[in-house]
Length: 509
Image 1: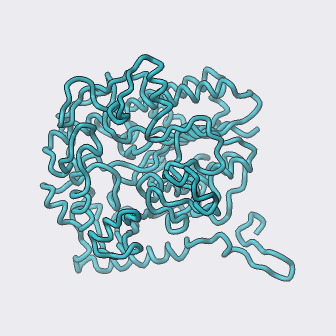
Image 2: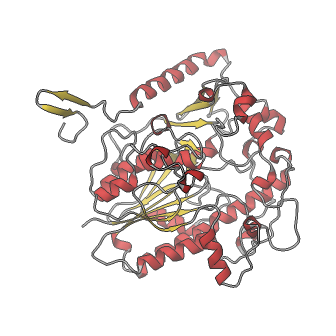
Image 3: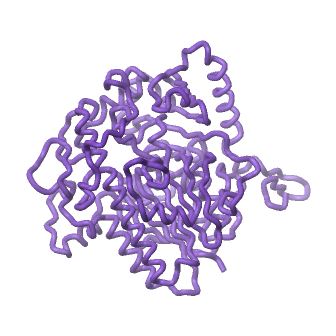
């Protein structure tokens, strides 16, 4: 019998911010317990940022170079297969709780369609049980039903309780630990779970917004971590030192104000904040992770109470990471590891526990879910099934490197085109990262090379170091070979012959 599948994403969760990953401060007891029962992938990477591009790779099993969702608001081409359609072919009714951030292909609808006014569309193929986009209307109406006064400006629900402050603060949220969006969404899933027939396997996608900003969390999580914790940030001695690393870093420093991340923090640039403010926000972010961890414990308890635990595959990952003070910034940008290193835990009944230190990528989840659901994955996917790891071994050709891409065009405003004096399609970069080196190739800006053994914080660009010229060339050639292998392969494995279509990527072949 096919298993139930619960596919959970948490937005903006750094891959190192887990107890089981060895973080010296963050406590995630429920996730750690889940990981001890399943496979914990310690070097798992997203293939793009921000949300829409990251999720397009996750949902289609394709690199950005093929799915071409380059920014929030870039339409997802309707020709692409995805996880939801694949699950339908496997006999499931894939059901969404939350959001998928996939903009509709405008060629598939009329010009007046309201879906054309938002990037927060729903991935085709899903049945939507509860759509919870960033404006959070269903959650706010639920809060109102619990007696909360909802502000006229919905964003003000995230202002910390107490006196207004223009600086980051550890003051709690205006709602309780059982009233977060995470708690609300968890409750709605558990209610739906109670309606499911025991003999009908289900597939649910639970898409949590947190620990995505705004950075605020209710008690007791607001004081769970000490802002004075001495754990160092990965960054230069000053913002100016980091800004000199690359024009993109300087651009990020110039572009992001505190109010973008912390309600009430105003328009001052994050890069100009004192160290204490960065540490306060980091303590809140860690608290947000622990708050999500609590709800994951509630999910596991709910599955056990419903008698579904032993028949349910549970996948937990994130769409992308978070800089969280590294390089004097917040958010998810470009080439730095914290932006793309994310958690991945897969607990499948009957599979042995495993800690996987090999590189894996978010595009690997679609073929993995295909294997777990007992359906054939499309042959043109860029991802590779992780089933060998789940079975206690490893693939014959484990990944020796990871890749991701980042596009910084601004289609609607043209701001980055003007800022860098480059055309639309030159505002992008690609990354290749292995055990020792990371090479960043930019279409219109200078490249970067990091020696991660000597410089794990990615603070020193060595691309102009003559002693590493051979390494730079080799990494560039490997990236070129990677692109050649993974350009759109949907039809390239087919040939029309006198006896019909030959498919070189079919299982029979």
